[in-house]
Amino acid sequence: MILSLIKRHLTVYLRDRWAVFFSFLSVFIILMLFMVFLRSMVMNWYSDAIHQSLAEVVVNHWVLSGVLMVSTVTVPLGFLGIMVQDRETKAINDFYVAPVNRGHIVISYLISALIIGVILGMINLLIGQLYMRIVYGEFLPFFDWLRLLGLIVVSTALFSSIFFYVVTLLKTSNSHGTLSTLVGTLVGFLAGIYVIIGGLPSFTQTFLSMLPTMQMASAFRIVYMSDAISQIPAEAMNIEAFNLNMGVRIDLFGYSPALGGLIVMAFIWTAIFVTLSLLRVRKMKR
Image (tube, rainbow, N blue to C red; front, side, top):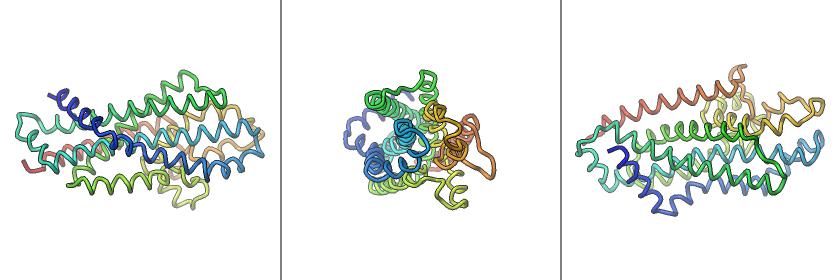
């Protein structure tokens, strides 16, 4: 039954090509803003300290890691729009009156969002790496590919669970569209992409570091940028300060979690919102 529901959800989503496009709209916006406004600014900060070509590789890895993380946010949210449509058209009532456990309904939507998010995230990763290969001759080590694929799964599961709970509070497609626009606008700020986190007040830095968006952005940057950062001469700049300034590492009340700690935080967030979603669905009227 769960597999049948998953197949149905994926078919409905992929049939609407505009829904797929708008799920990636934030990614396109971030890339455009970076190329037009942010790239030269960030490059000017570090081109004097390290070689121009290395600075370009580091900065491009920084933005590509952020774009990859953003896709794990916007794609699940866009996909879960079909759940809002199901509620709006009363199609979901067919599931409720069928001999199906409501927990299975939750799982089917979550797994479907995870599948489509992981697939599109992998495509995003591949396109970014092809660009780096063609332009700079750079390619991530194989082990980093595996770690990034794991992060895509973890991050997509996290934001699928968060937005599933949020979507259960929505009743119309218009409200979901408004939410998608709001999230697509804010995610670049909440992940420290539009504004470098090191340039913000300490209170704002701490607040952003407490959010799952910044935590997962940090996780992606740690892996995506590790090889490029390792090529920076230690005498050229303070690597620790660079990591904190660019959001590669976050500062949580004096504690800078490593990759393992960030993944544990993601699992905690996911468990919280999956539980809330199950409780929410069970309370919904038949």
